[in-house]
Length: 411
Image (cartoon, rainbow, N blue to C red; front, side, top):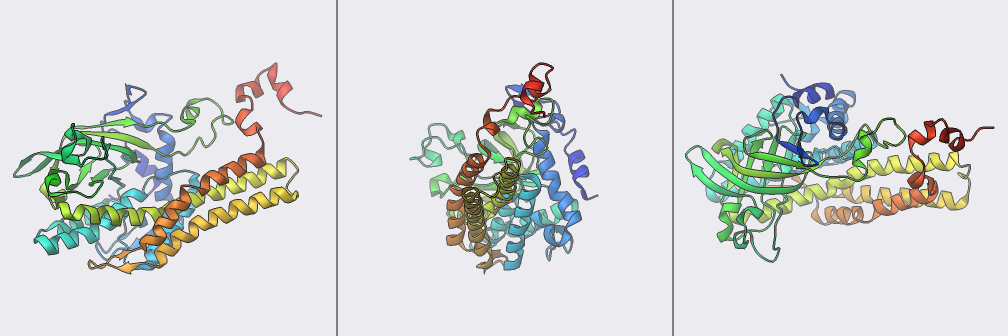
């Protein structure tokens, strides 16, 4: 049965026997860990949005014939790409954080056109395999994670030149049923909260790097995978009692380091194997999709701008001209990010495979905006709010019998 709701999605993650380490300790059940659960809640919103706003978060697929979650949809026209952006912004507004499914969506779309072109040049059948895989994930409505970033090492050297070959994921063994891969992927968004991970090369490759030119789908709970959970600022606040200190305690993002040790990929789930000259095409197409996907940050910007405006109201300064100027500047920066991303989607072109690729120049403009503007939006929000938001006493002090009355104004 397909997953239909956020609650069903959360239950689908239980009892998978994942090897997840956090603070050096093996986590028995990630779903129930207070620091991990907020990131799971954020992904669950992608399912619930598909139920409450299906015109925004679902699409009819010509591949499977099913009405599917938009995160699993292969873009069939520019409007599909635009609706991805609108969905991403909405989810940013709902969660105020990363909802972790954009990497998988962009991986599927970039692989769709790349496998088609590999097959055309090498007479392989990767595209057919990918389509079969897509049909299966449509049927079950699963979460797909993408793993592109290798941990690298000496960045002046190619993967095959590294002193430690495992700094890049590569094939270490083959048999008639498939391949075995070893290595590590860093900064992997939502990997523990996914059902499948698609591993991909991270850079342009040479002929001597053929063993690193591997793309395949792996179940998240496959034998040989270890996850080491990444830190986020203020992450342990979600483990504290109360609400005041926790911040966005319901939702959070997630990254982890993935260690792969002789992980098996069957032939039917391999979508590139040794075609090194197509690694750069895949990377470029993926980054093109993903850089305009950063419009998700504008949903968070909406939340921050609204919060700053509310603080100004509480402080009685909402009519001050310098406060209005700051809110206008925050809005200008936020909409500038969105404008570049959605323009990139509108400027899409049809690939040889039939799906649509967004404009690369505007996608890169969107990315550059995201590396700058959210920090300025945050700075302005803090300026409006004042120092209290970063130095105020703890919730326990506000509730303490001695300190509480001292902290709370009373007339």
